[in-house]
Every structure is written in structure tokens, then in C-alpha cells.
Length: 485
Ligand code: GLN
Image (cartoon, rainbow, N blue to C red; front, side, top):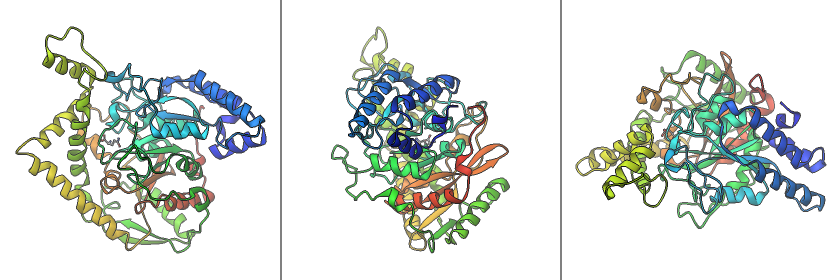
């Protein structure tokens, strides 16, 4: 690994500002690493020429004294964000040739800030999955152990950051897809509050749950990235007008007196001893920083997975109806008639997990079942949200594990969708409640990374980043890196 790849985003900004290296050198070092680690399969598309062009522009602007602090810093986008003139596949055969006519708002903001886009990152098809094995472009490998999954659906984003192919990656989280891969790869992932980051141009999976966010190597790097992508966007009617705070300035607010709730439903008998031990160390660190730990209840949390796996497929079945072989994506050759065009185009274009979700969702929304499944799931969703709001009257943040265990072997859960769905047991509830959540490294278990999760009230991302930043000042978990880079 080159010295430049080893630098965090903050250190890269400093190096560019002082002229220790140029943006062109920095971007080239990352493109070389992308090449060298092609076997991870983290990227679907590499945009080397574009990245080098932007880097050259950044270097020229810097000479003139006109460069923004992020000009020329490498970034890569999950291939669910539309990019003008560059493939956007969503990890699907359905969109394998799709070139969007516009940039997603997140992409546009990153470009306006001066980032150099290295390319588009692999993911589970349409963000449905917890292992990245559902990609039509093949699984992503975990840099810590290449026989294991990196988590999903933002597996490419997490693997790329863990392997130092990019200091920052965009990602999306509908039920855990930023936090779970971050936990599996020893990286930091932030899923902002629903509405904090524009969904414009982010291909929809389950619109009431989807939220764009970031994966990076430290809380400070996340704070810098979030400042770029957060904020109101008139093109997204669910985008919030809440003022965007100065996330970086807030990192140093003291943790003294913060009350951190431990939901008993997270620390129940299902938690392995090893995970309990890992979280114990996090708890001790937080106490040493002056935080107060208290127990809280989230009584309806056990219903989060069933509710999520009704609501998310229901919304997916509706969102994915636009892929019909007429307007977007794959179209079958020689259709006999319109029905044949629809059915064969969709049959060929979608993978099996996407088809399963469409079937479940269509069933749950159909007449006669709507009240029994969809309406019931929405009622549970409201109860879960109330549980969180109640808990936040007693504490400022919640702490829990991000995942039940560490990264599992490729293939281990592929034939058992329910086992795969249970991977999301600690993450889906925050999406149902629209809350922000972050996953941060808590060391290694048997050589594999493990993550802890912080959840906060709506729009309190700064508090999550502040606490994680303080932990990162007194521990070195976030600096651990896979061997062989
Ligand atoms: N694993 C969950 C699912 O498959 C979450 C995915 C996500 O957050 N995009 O729905």
C-alpha cells in the first residue's frame, strides 16, 4: 500500500493544502490500489480518466489559490446513485446498460465540493441483501478474509474503504446497509436521519426507509463528508429543512454527563458472549469519557424484523414496477405481445432475491391481505417509533451491537433467506423510526472486525459523531487494517 492510501480523509486534505502531494498523485495512488485489488470486486465501474481530469483541475485551482479544501480528494459512489454519463447498474442485469441522464443530488454535491470520483461501487441488487452476494456482478470479498462477505447491501463501499481504495464512499441504508457492512469491515458508517440527505437520483428500494449516507475510516472523516451531502433539496419532497449544524466543530463537545441508553432488547440472551465482551469494552470507554450508562426498554423491538420485511418488500414491489422493459433497462428480444414483453423482460432482468421481494410485497399489498399484513406492519412501525421517542426522554443516545456476529463465509446463508434477514435484527428499527444510526469499530473477534452502534434522536447526527470521535481519541480500533494491502 502506498503512503497516500494510508492517510485518512483529514490527513489527505492537510497534505493537499500544504502541497505535500498533488491531487493527481493522490488520485493515481488510489486508482493503482483499485487495480491491485480488483479481486475484491468492490467496483462495478472505474472512471479513471474522469478522476484524473478532476484531480488535474483541482491541482490547477490550488496553484491559483482557488481550490476548495476537498478539491481532488478521492470518493466512490454506491452504484445506486445516478451519475450523468456513467453507468448506474444498481447491481442488476436489469440496468446493466443504463446511463443516467443526470446526477443524483448527493453526487452533484460531492462534485461541487471538488471530490474526484474514482467510480461506482458494487452492491446487492437494488440494495436488497445483507452480504453483497445478490449482485449480478458477483460477490464482493471482505478485505479481512477474502472467503467472507463484506456485508451488504453497501458491500462495495465498505470493502473499498477498508482496503484503502478510497477514503470516503457513499452508501445507502434501508434496513442496515451502511452500518452492517461497516461493522463487518472495520470501517465507520453513518445512516443519517430520514430526510437529512436528498434521495433525488438515488434509485428507490423502499422509499419511506431509504437514506443516503457514508462510509469512512473515522468519525471525523464522516463529519466532513456529511457536511457536504446533508441539507434541504427542493427536488425531494421528503427532504428536511432542518438547519445543517457544523458537524466537525461539534466533534469536540465534551461527553461528560451524556446519558447513553442500553436497550435491554439489544443485550438479551441472543447476544453471543464474544459480542457481549466487545461491547463491554466500549461501555467502559464511554464511562471513562464521563458518559452515564442507563438501561432502557424498547418493548416492541422484537417485531421490527417482521414489520420491516413486510413494509420494505411492499414498497419495493411498487417502486420496481417501473422496470417493465418499456421505459428503462433490460428489454427482451422479439416479444410476442405486451404481456410477454413485461414478463420475460422482468424475468430475465431481475435476480432471485429481487423477485422474492416483489412477490412478498405484491402479496402483502393485495386486496384481502392488506389489512392483515401491510396495515399491521405500519401499526408496529408506529409503536417502534414511539418506543424510541420514549427512550430518548431518558437518554441522549442509544448503544447496541451493529450485528449479531462477525462477517460470515460467502455462501453460508445464501440458501436461507430468513437467516439472512435476521442479520438486520439490530439495524432495521432505526429505519422504521427514521432515526440516525452509526456503526464504529470495536476491535476484532478472532481476527475479524466487530462494530458497535450508536443511535440518536432525529437530526442528532452530530451527537453520534461526537461520541464516536471521543472514543476514537482514546482507542485505536478504527486504525486497525487488514493485512496484505
Ligand atoms: N438487509 C436489508 C434488506 O435486504 C437492508 C438492506 C438495505 O439497508 N438496503 O432489505
